[in-house]
Structures are given as structure tokens and as C-alpha cells.
Length: 358
Image (cartoon, rainbow, N blue to C red; front, side, top):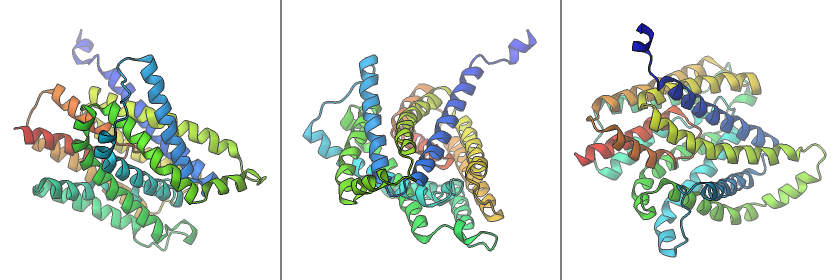
């Protein structure tokens, strides 16, 4: 009787969803990194494969479940969604190039400006001013980024990130910020369906990437690699398949996590994922972990957690069902690796929309 009083029947479900989310996010990062290490000259083709697999999985899901509705192609709708699709494509390209050129454990540092940039873009878009505590959180995360990218004598030259890789990371963060704002205005064009917007985004991104795969010479690169005895094509083939499937599952994990868990629970699971990503990067890829990098990851994670707490404290109480619907619209479309700063960003958008209604 006493145990029953303290036992929440939803606890196993919450734990399962959190583990599912963390596993999918970690697999995405490390399989992506393995493929990019194996085939560094094929980033766009690799990304194109992921988009096509996601589209195929959406069609397969629609065949199995009537809840999955594939949108009909309409030129008028395509024109209205072009901006969000283009921004998504550009952001994913920079994201992939950044991951290719930096160590797996440093990837979350290179993209550490997602939160501050999204706050800035969101405030410019809504013409509002952030609260003092929000500014403090943004400054804290920015400080963590600067600590991580600062030159360190303890870091071997081969492990130091290049300037161009940092530019990729910053541009990736900036386009994630643009995307987070654009999806709010794009959903009405898809009948407020995240599934339809996900389909448009994946299919549209594939169409935009296809000509650049040819222009960048990646088909010729692939042909050259096939004739190289040192290249293992199975890594590229199976890696493309795995990341396509787990990218799709990560969308499902995002949906489930917002339905079953609170933003605070998701915040702590994301922080745990950040620690695991660092440890696995050191163990699997033998990444170099310096005091600067450990401090940077800690500060960025702490800033993102503080920001999520601030938004939770500042938000006005609203029915859980409304929060779920809003979050489902936002988080399914953001194809990310589950970083805690992006989780905080999405929660921010969700709460801001709730504030606008009051």
C-alpha cells in the first residue's frame, strides 16, 4: 500500500520514451560520423539518401496507418513552403559539413550557438524583448561556446577544429534558428499537420539537393571510390539506411517525448545525452577531451537547462493538451540530433505561442 502511494504508473512509460529518444539521437550522431569519416567526399549524396529514405518511410507508414496522410502536390502550396524547405536544406548541409570536419564530442560545441541565435531571430521576428533571465541564459551559452572554441595548448594540432568547420557550425545554428521561426508560419499551409509538413520538408529538401549532388561532382567521387580497394562501400550503404531510419524514428521519439514527458524531464534527458555523447566520442573515436572542452560542454548544458527552467517558470499555466499539440507541431519537424539547446529552443517557441494567446 505504501509503495503504491509513491508509485506512478506512468513512470515505466516515461523511462522507455526517454531511453528511446536518447538512443535514437546518439545513434544518429555516431552513425553519421562513421559514414562521413568513411566517405568525406560524399556529404550531399549521403544527406540526399537520408531524405529519400524518410520519404519512403512516410509512404510506408501511410500504407499501414490511416493517421498518416501524404499531402497532394499543389504548386501553390509548394511556393508557400519554399522558404522553410530551402532553409531546412541549407541548415542540414551546414550541419553535415560541420559534423564531417569536427570530432563527434566537439560537434555539440561547434553548434553551441543554436539557443542564443534562435532567441535573437525569434525576438526580431516577434518584435519583442527577452527577459533579463533569458538574456543571462543566452550569455551563459555563448560563453560556453567561446570557451570551447578558444585555442588550447593542450590540444594537438590535428584535433583542433578549422576555421571553416566553426563557420559551418555557426551557419548551421543560424539556419536552425530561421527554421524554428519559419515552421510556425508554414504549418497552416499544411492544414496544421506536422506529418504533411515533414513530408513536404523531406521531399522538397531531396529535390533541392539532387542537382547539387551532380554539380558538386559527388557522383564522380562515388565512381572513383568504387574502384578504390581501400573504400568500404558497405559503411556508406548501411550507414545511409540506418541514419534514414533513425532520423525518422527520432521524429517519432520527439512526438512521444512531448506527449509523455514534461519539458523539464526532456531537459534532463537531453543533458544526459550530452554527457553520453562526450564519453562515447572519447571511447569510440578517441576524441581528445581538454579542460576547455569539458568546461564548454558543461557551461552550454547548464545554460540550456537554466533557460528551460526560466521559460517553465515564466510561462502561464495552460492545459496539458494544448501544450502537447503545440509542441508536436514544432518538434517533429526539427530534424536534429537531440541537443539540449534545441530542446530548450523548441520549448521556448511552444511557450511563447501560449503567451500570445492570453
